[in-house]
Image (tube, rainbow, N blue to C red):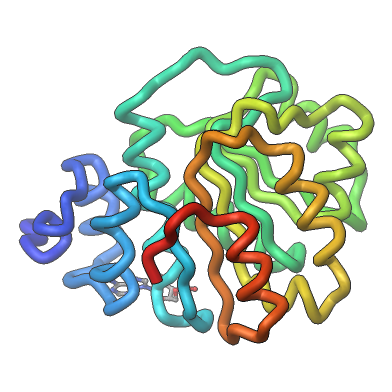
Length: 209
Ligand code: AMP
C-alpha cells in the first residue's frame, strides 16, 4: 500500500510498512505537524490529548533515528527514553513502539512499579533501544545500577500535566538531570499550566510548538 501523505513527512520505508500494517491511511494533525521537525532533530512542546495520535507522532521519528544511526547496545543503557505517568500508559506506549517498529528489530524494555524488578532488570541487562518507564521505578532501578541514562539520545516526557498532578514532577526533574546535555527532548501535555511551561523552558532547547 502506498501512503503518500506519510511519505511526504519524510518517513522511511520501514515506517511506512508498519503504518500500512496498522491500516493507517493518513497522518493526524499532530503527526503532520510534529514528524517533520522531529526528523530534523528539533525539540517539541506538544499540546495534545490522548486519542490524537501523539504516540505515533513521537514514536515514528524516534524509531527512524534509532534505525538510521545504529550503535552497539551497552549494558543497562537506553538510547531513547519515554517517561509516562502510569503503568497502563507505559505498557500502551511500549506496545506502540513494537507496532510502529515492526520489522526494525528494536530492543525494548518497559519498567513500572507494582511488579517484580527482576524481569525488568533482565530486560535492561544488554541495553535497549527504547525504554518506557514510570518515574518512580525508573529512579529505583537507576539507583540500583540497572538503568544508565548517560547515553540517551531522545527523551520523551508524555502526559506531563498528569505527572505534575500525580506528584511526580520532582522525580521528573531528577530524571532529566541524569540525561546527557546533548539530546533531543519532547514534552507532551494535554494542558499547559504555568508549571509545565516552566519545565519546558528548563528542559527544551528552542522547541517547536
Ligand atoms: P494515541 O493518541 O497515540 O493514543 O492514539 C490514539 C489511537 O489512534 C490509537 O489507537 C492509534 O492506533 C490510532 N492512530 C494513531 N494515528 C493514526 C492514524 N494516522 N490513522 C489512524 N489511526 C491512528
